[in-house]
Length: 279
Ligand SMILES: O=C(O)c1cc(=O)[nH]c(=O)n1[C@@H]1O[C@H](COP(=O)(O)O)[C@@H](O)[C@H]1O
Image (cartoon, rainbow, N blue to C red; front, top):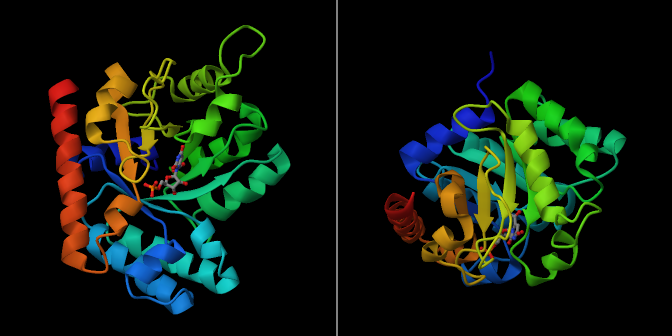
């Protein structure tokens, strides 16, 4: 039987520490690395991050937008990046934040979660705001291929509250309702479910029940102002399932491979200490 994403992620978190580093090739970062804002610059950037980090961090999260902006040649670099990162031992979380009506969602699911796709990744970020059930084709595809789905739930940006903290008919917040759907998907999965929630590390108080039985991706560390020390207050008893995520604050240390490694190792150590003290 195919090992589940949750099982693979739990093992990676336990052996490597639970850090995710985003591969976000912003034009400003390419410039600060001394690279041109073009396809060769993109490729050099992404493959350098893979070389530096794929054998030591649990998760690498390429941000699809920064590859798509170069068109088909950028997407070809994304394919190469995903494959190189997986071969080097990282779990790849494709950050494409897909969400559509079910029949189209099936297309996204086959693009990212079907073993035969050139963009096959270990997991995909999805948005549930066309209704949680619209995600069913992705949830089903993940189940078949042993991959994961991270449902964007309580985001790190301040504007997110407008939608995510609004109340549904029975008085729960939209975010809480999504978390309960996620928990239902993960019921009975050990040691960790394969359906994650994205919950920003920048929220001072999640204001919701985070016991979803799956991983909690926590972006917002570094450039958006959160630190590992903020995690216990946001995640409480769910801290052991948190995968903190940082992009710019690590990437700015490139292009030097050793400096990138040091930055990621330092952050992973800080996370491990906080989780060890509070987990
Ligand atoms: O799904 C995400 O990864 C995500 C969700 C969220 O709530 N906030 C958030 O910042 N992200 C992503 O996490 C990365 C944050 O990058 P830095 O702010 O540079 O660390 C970006 O790729 C965002 O798209």
